[in-house]
Image 1 (spheres, rainbow, N blue to C red):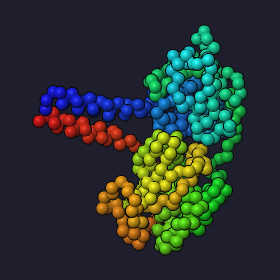
Image 2: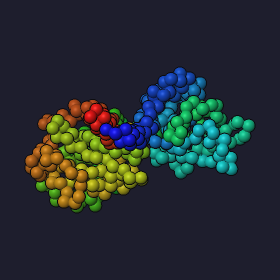
Image 3: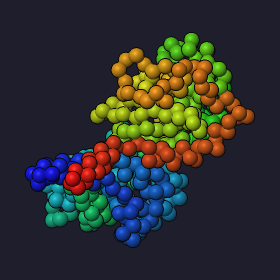
Image 4: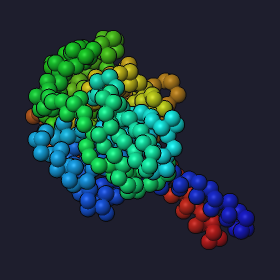
Length: 397
């Protein structure tokens, strides 16, 4: 290979590999700073760490062990602590330099508490004010009070990650408000009251309801089709076997919690509650700016609304019923090419989990959770790896 060609390929590989370097592990980063060990611990326990790792641009207002001790002394349950800490995760980049160059000296920016949908009104916005003399104040935007102050910059990776040490917890009555325990949530009642009444009826008419309910506490994401979509699907649903009816319903559940921000920042395959042995029953999550779609190779459904998005339960409304390729013929409209093995002939060719007696779906839930934890992947890394191998082969010629 000519040196000029090698240089071109090397440059291409560099461009492809740079985006992968923007990924980070907040738990690993904070582990190097023992003064934030309690803060780091609760980012993990509240599942915020996983959500933070999926974000591309973020500023963390880190609380030292003394500030965390003050927060924990109030005896809040884990779900409330999650809300409080999510207020300290800003979905924009603020390095130390930017803090002292704020236009007009003050600004408001959204936190993860706001973007999650858990905050009422503008309670999830944070006010940042440059008070000059090196002093920068922080406080909930809806109170007007600046009760915490910039201490130092801990880590900066422009313009993706900034970790800033602030003096104390942001004082927010809304973030500290009590929230219902997830185990007490009645999923079918929630679905009925939020515009998924027909889907809820299908769950209650089968043993699928039990599987969904049992997975809430450990993490569950539900994609429920709208009432009109379910009604249009009913003729096909009635022709399915009892086992396949349950499989279709379980296909609308994922045994991990995925917030909207996580869905919007990731693309890739996800296993479902119906995934069992050789029956993959998976689908592809794809995002385009603010739009999130689910592709099954039979149908493409769009998320049209968020009913619940509060760890450990997320429920999203779809404009279509999800049809697994294991049970339905691929769509006639252009879809990504699938292998012959993935194209099942029709409803009678494969039978899903028929009941608790036939298949113990719960036994495989842990395996599905592990697969899904790494399932939302970016294909760019694999492309870069492939090109790297090609380069090595060509270079050896």
